[in-house]
Picture (cartoon, rainbow, N blue to C red):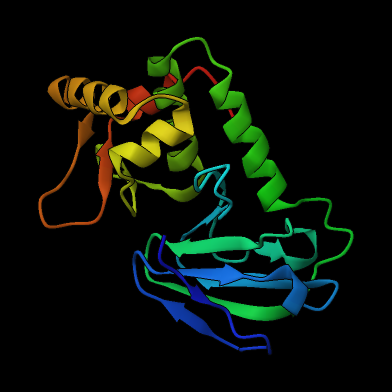
Amino acid sequence: MSYRFLPDGPVPKVRLNIGQTVLIDPSSRSGGSCLEVIEGVARVFCPCEETEGMTLAFLQSGDQLRTDRLCSEGICVEALTPLCFNSDVEALENSGFDPVNEWTLQLLRIRHLGNAEQRLQALLALLVNRLGKRCGDWCQLPFRLTHERIGELIGSTRVTSTRLISRLRSADLLVVPTGESTLSLAPEFIEAAPLTV
């Protein structure tokens, strides 16, 4: 896994291109500080060998990642779209909402659905409802995930996720526009998802 380290000192704006990853070392962060996404979408994952890059959350503009609640191995932030974040802001107290905990809970709920088709539909609906938008006759995600990553998120193999995605494409429920980094999904597919957020 290839990543760069986040500087120990505060950096007002860290910019990452799509696919770039930074490792945040919890021992180098001050208590109560956070990363705050200024623009873009990020995937937060565990760098530990045992968990093989397990996704914990997706963050978007305004979301914070508390750096005092990380595992001892640290945490990685990957840019799914061009990403800009502040590396040292004060945590919002008394907000009662932690986006990382909320995402982890929702991803865990998805993993406990009965079959891979339900899990894929619930995952895509969650991503569209939280990070996407409605564009005419389609719902659009501003990024794509690999079939391997989708497999990790729904608890299946890459082969299974590829087969399920092929079925969605054949049924005209999913479109991957050529030359774009977006993913389009049929609204009826999203609205019929087995879990609501």
